[in-house]
Length: 170
Image 1 (cartoon, one colour):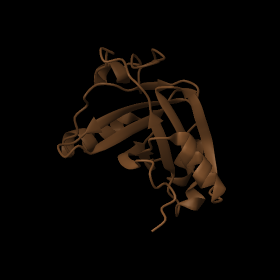
Image 2: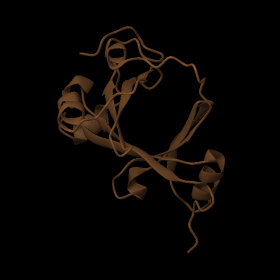
Image 3: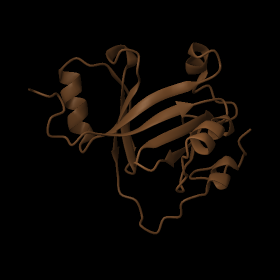
């Protein structure tokens, strides 16, 4: 079978769930289902959202997301979900984002949000119309400093995560 991304080491990494408040997601994904925050998370000031990840015993991960104050990033998503939120996207890691973009574009897939500005995280999105209504994120993670400090859950919610804006979550 001729796979469009064959040879690029594609693997599923996480499911992202967005809500108006991460705090509203914690009773389900942490308390009920046993997700553990292993440190990390923070703010994307350019796009306007806060994020953190929980991991589970089998290695699965769920990313929790919320808009930053004044952000319109999730407006259309929350409109579709009647303000409740839900599954926002599925994330797949690829070994070569440039090659993935070239192959998918060549085959006529609609991509958007290509961002190669941060060597720690480069990404592109496959339009939901191409994936039966699901937003697919393809990302190429980059190098991290081994001794890099990972903020606690409390730090992230207090606005003190990576690139934190200092404004606590609601």
